[in-house]
Image (cartoon, rainbow, N blue to C red; front, side, top):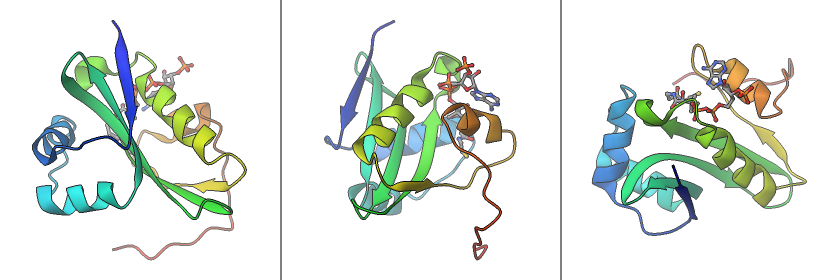
Length: 125
Ligand SMILES: CC(C)(COP(=O)(O)OP(=O)(O)OC[C@H]1O[C@@H](n2cnc3c(N)ncnc32)[C@H](O)[C@@H]1OP(=O)(O)O)[C@@H](O)C(=O)NCCC(=O)NCCS
């Protein structure tokens, strides 16, 4: 299987929301398109089909947040998310990276190099 990875290319809101739906997340199409347009993003394609994405927001010098790392279930377990993470980590190499994770995904991020930090706080929505 040959997966193509594209960075900051054309986005299609319908395709994005379908990929979110495939993992059980319902997102408002307009809002998610805005969020991607305000981010640095990687899209993964199997032929013409969008099968995953990951995005980051960075100041380019100090800090980078990682968000919305998603791969359609039939394509999971093939190294696709790790490859997208590598692209983000390389792009913003030298900055501090931070993220939050949902249940069951901590180990995935550890495999991408993330370590626990007990000096982080957040305001839950
Ligand atoms: C989490 C997710 C993005 C991983 O995508 P993926 O393409 O299957 O991950 P990869 O195949 O690149 O996995 C890379 C490594 O992490 C491991 N891994 C992946 N998901 C894991 C999980 N949930 N728990 C433990 N290990 C995991 C893989 O086994 C692999 O290990 P290896 O390098 O030793 O072989 C995918 O399962 C997904 O889209 N989940 C639903 C959306 C979601 O919850 N996203 C994360 C939000 S915090």
